[in-house]
Each structure stands twice: as structure tokens, then as C-alpha cells.
Image 1 (tube, each protein chain N blue to C red):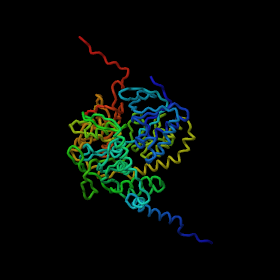
Image 2: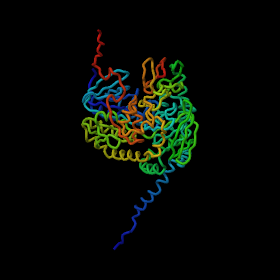
Image 3: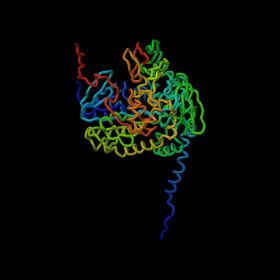
Image 4: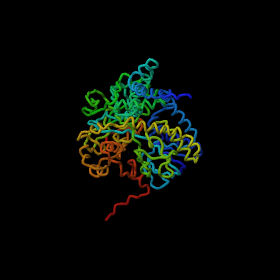
Length: 136
Length: 429
């Protein structure tokens, strides 16, 4: 009679993997695997996109934030324009200056007066030429 | 009055787009609405047809938007769903204009927002959400040369840091509160999904100049009128980093307001749905992050299922079930891997604001026993954001369960809320 092997080979392989995986993955979040990947590929996209955005702005238009002109590219949100003008969007109950926070329309910190309409969520609003934005 | 629709889809992110597309392809009259100026949701925010290829997830965006455009689906950008005044009727608002739309079925794909936790200095200009700063940069904010600390929790941090580096920012460091052991366990599950590993590695590649540290978190932010420095700790020692911006988000929480208003049952922080995406309310399907934070792939599958079900094509919907179960497992693994450490509860000092809308301090909330009591006594969560920021924070800090939701779920004009109401002339003697 053939004797049953005490240890099935595929099972031990499985155990080996479970011990090795955390170690491997630790390095994914560390730098090791990335170091290897650095040699494999490098994406030169960063320079391109910043140059692109500078060019976009230069052919954009101006709006005013608290009376000060700000040059923006087409498609820029009013919240982004206010940040670039270094102006707060609103003052809180305790008169603290507040600026855009959530960036996606839920926190209401970026409310400002746009073309005379108060309480506009500026992060959800796209700049249009000659727009007038005022804090608060 | 405008037309009625067989299906109204709220939220034009991946889940909403997939659901609307499938339902429209099946011949239904579908309306897809979103409060943003362009469809795409957060993950596909500001993607353009010409440049989408260079972004991760760009090909999915191109595929689905092209497929959506071939249908007769009505796409309504800029519209906010605020209420359901009667069964089968949804109330919308855009730029102060209100509209009530009759519908047969609803697909809710309202997505998620970041979880924000209060710490000293978090209200200073220059402190933003991680995804928040990414969204602002995508919306034209110039990040060139800015020194940015990225901190908090979640897989989003790496993606945000990579996006900011691409936009010319200098990443000072990336600080993840989760333990390396937790992440390693999560990474283990990722081995079955090499595409996600490659994505993570690509993000890290772009931020190699900055340290990525686990078990580390921001304890306070200092500056005169704006962020000047950020203090980071690993639980043993603290160090100070000079920077211009802090991008800080603690993973994601679903936008439950609208489904909650409709009466959908919530279980474990998410909308409870069956394998056909149906919530506890008949005719209301919930898809994407609403049913578990699982990312774009899960949203697309769930959206398609909801679309097929809306068109009464259950066979096609059920065919996607095996993929769905795998993706839902992934979502719960994400939640476990990026679970918040208890030390974060101690970050807020007595005078730190918890509610940014009404300026309510941590000290004022300490004496309250529930979310309701906090609202009544301190006005916490009663401001313009309606508890969207402080609600999730209070849940983590004090263990309070969210309650007391009332329409409208977003600030709206009186004329939108009561379109027929006539304001009586004041009586003259």
C-alpha cells in the first residue's frame, strides 16, 4: 500500500507565500521596488504639464479679486483664482480668514461674492472674463 | 415644466456615467445630473478628451464618455439634487433656479468626500484636503514651486502627491497614519490585482524625492494668517517641517445625505444594497462609494448593474455579480487597512474648532452626549455645510451617530423650496 505523504507540497508552497508577501509588500510602500522601477522608466511629464499651464494662463484672461487683477487660464475655478490672489474667501463667525478647503463643493469655506451674488461656492464656479469676486 | 424621465441618475462620476449609459442604451429616457460644471466626478475631474491618455484611469474615462455620448441620455451639469418633495419627484437647483423632475427610478451615485479630522491650526488658509488640493490644482491653481506636506490616510495620498509633483510642487513629505503592518496586509491582497500595484508604484516613482512614512501624522499647523510650518509625529518624537500648503485627508466617507433623505437603510457606515444594487427603498439603487469605498472599478461595475436592473435586464446584471463580489471584498479590505488609530482622537486641543461653519470648539462639544445634543447646544453641524465636515469628525472623536437630516440636503433658495408660494403683502393699516 502506498503511504500518504505527511506534507502536501502545494500546501507548503502556500505557507511560504504567506510569510514572504508582507515582506515584499513592505518594500512597495518603501522605496526598494520603486528604486528598481526608476531605472526601468522615468516619466518626463512634470515639466511638460507645468509649461503647459503657464502657457494656458498667458493666453487666458483677467478677473478681479477684491479689486486686484488676477490672470487665469480658461477653465480655472474662482476658488483657485482667489488662492492665487492670496485673498481669503470669507471670514468665519469669529472673524477668522478662511480659504478653500475641500475643493469639491461640500465644506462651504470658499463662499464669496461673485458678480454681486453673495454666498457662491467658488470651487464649483468657473471664472469668466471680467468677473468680479469679493471676499465674504 | 420639463420632461419626465424613466431614470434619473444623481452624480456623474464613473458609477453614474456607467449606470446612465447602460440604461440609455437599453432604450430608457435617462437624465444624468451632477453639481459640477462637467461630468467625471472626482476621479475623472477636469479630464479632457485630448489629454486624458496621460492620466491614470484616462482610458476608462475616454471609453465611458464616448459611450455615453452615443446615447440619448440628457446630461445636466451644474444641477444640485436637494430634495424629494414627493415620491417620484426630485427637486434640483442651479444658480438659484429650481426645478422638479418626475422620475420612474433613481440611481444614486453621489460618491464620497474626504474625512477631515480637526487638529490645532487646521482652519488656517493653506490647509486643504488631500483630494481637495488635487481638485484645486486640476481647476487651475498654480502649484509651481509650492512646498507641500501630504498627510492623513488612504491610497489617495500617493496619488495626490504624484499629481502635485507633476504640477510643479515640491513634496516635503507624505505621512500615512496607518501602520506598516496594516498596509502590508493590504498590499498582500493587492498582489492579486497587479494593475493597482503598478499604479501605486508609478505614483511613488513621481515622488521619490519625498519621504513616505507610515505610522506618522500631523499634530499641529502653525503660521501667521496662513500655513508656515507643520509638526509631524511618529508617536515617539516630533519634528517640524516648513511648508506652504498642507494637504490632509483621512481616507473617504460616502455622501449619504440624499439616500438618507430618501430613507435608504444605512449599515456599517454605507448604504445597504443587495447584489442588484437595490437599496431598502423600492426603485432606488445606490452605486459606487455609497455602498463601500472601493474606487473607480467597483463604481463602474455597480453602475452597470444598476443600469441593467433599471432596464429590467436582470440576467445581464447578475452576470457581473462575481466581479462585484471581488470588488466589494477589496473595499472592505481598504477600510481595514486604513482604519484610524485612536491617537488621532487626541489631536484636537480644547480650543481647536471642530465645526468650521459655526466655529464650535472641541471643549464646547465635550459636555454633549449625542450629535443631536451638540447641534442643539452648540450649533455644531448647523452651519452651511450641514455637518458634512464635522459630522464624520464627531463620529470618530465622540462616537456619535449622525441623525436629524432634513431637506434641503444642500443650502437652497426659498424660491426653489417653495416655487408656488406667494409672499403676502404686508398688511397696511
